[in-house]
Amino acid sequence: QVQLVESGGGLVQPGGSLRLSCAASGFTFSNYGMSWYRQGPEKERELVARISSAGGRTNYADSVKGRFTISRDNAKNTVYLQMNSVEPEDTAVYYCNFKIISIDYWGQGTQVTVSS
Image (cartoon, rainbow, N blue to C red; front, top):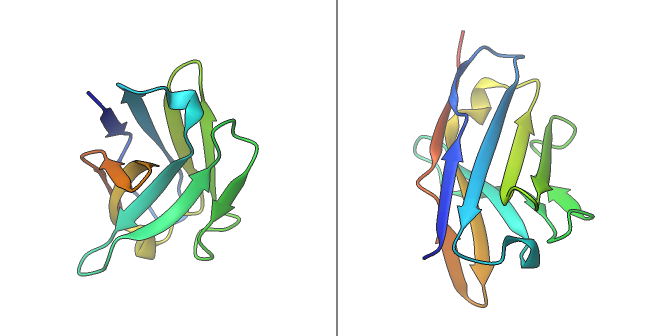
């Protein structure tokens, strides 16, 4: 069955860096675009970044442009989110996502807390 497993979250100081990973299984990973979403305290879930199936196209939420980088390794069935210059507003649970037609698949999420 489809499985998305995020890892790499934790506590980081403002201005620091963190790399999130999402290991995928149960589907042909290289056929699908992948996304990272996040949901902060008392906020709605929002799109952070998206990458095309081959990795050639990416797009980002305005709030993370220039600080976050999404990438993927199709040989490892893994998508990454490199987070640099993090801010307290980046505190959230981060989720890996992909969609088949109208069905969304989600991982369990990984908590990122930005605090001094």
